[in-house]
Amino acid sequence: KTRATAFTYQSIAFSLSGSAGPVMAGYFIDLGSFSYAYLAAFSFATVGGLAFFLLSSNFPKNISNISKLKRTEKHSALELFALKPVRNVLIASAFVSMAWDLQAFMIPVYGTEIGLDAVQIGWLLSAFSISTFAVRTVMPIISKAFEEWKIIIFVLTSSGLIFLVFPFIHSLPLLFVFVSVLGMSIGSSQPNVLSLLHTVTPDGRIGEAIGIRTMLMNLSHCVFPLLFGAGGSLVGAAAAFWSLGGTLLAGAGYLRASNKNFSSPTST
Image 1 (cartoon, rainbow, N blue to C red):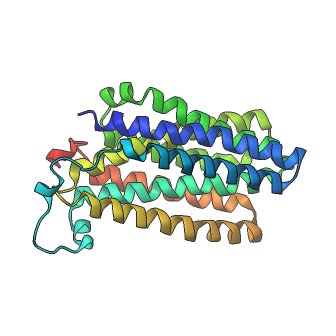
Image 2: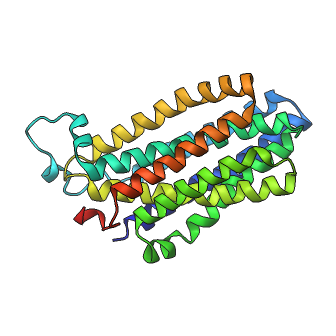
C-alpha cells in the first residue's frame, strides 16, 4: 500500500540532482568553458562513488523472502508481454521515457534555435526538474486520491498537448511556465509506473519486468535522440515536438480504451 510513496521518495533524489545540475553546467559553460562543466561533473561522480563505497556496509545483505519467490521452472521474459496488465504498464513506461528524452534533448536544441544562451537553457532544464521535485513531494497525497492508471493517462494526455503547443512559444517566461507544467506532468509518472509494475507482475518475476522496462528505456535513449536530431536538422525542432505530442495522445487513447473501467491493478 505504501509502494507508490516509497518510489516517490526515491524519485525526489533524481529531481534534486536534475534541478541543480543544468544550472551549474550553464554557468560553468558561460563563465568558463565546457571543460569546467565536465570537470565539475567528474568531481560529483567521484564524490558520489566514494560516498556509495563508504556507506555500502550499511546496506541490507539480503532481501527478505526473495528465495521463496524464486521458481525452478524456466521462463522467457517475453512471456510477460502476454499478460495484459504488465504489457500496458510497460507500454506506458515506454511512452513516458520518450517524453522525458524529448524534453531533455530537444529543449536545448529549441532554445538554441530561438536564440537562448546556455544559462537560460540551463534554467529551463532546471525548472523542469524543480517541477518534478515539487509534484513528487505531494505525490503521496495525490496517490491516495487517484488510482495509478488515471494519473498515468493524465500524464500522457497533458504532456502530448504541451508538446503540440511548445513550438509556438518564443517568450522565455512562457517557456518557463510550459516547462514547469511539463515537469509536474511527467514527474508524477515514474512512481506510479514502478508501483503498478510491482503490483501487476507475477510473484518472483519482478526482476524480469524491470529488466524489460530498462531495456525499453535504454532503447528509447539510443534511438529517439537520433531521430529527434535528424528530424530537427531537416525540418526544425517543431516537427519532433508535434510528432511526439501526437504519439503520446494516441498512447493515452490506447491505454484508456485498454483499461476502460480503471479498476485496480490486482483485479485487472
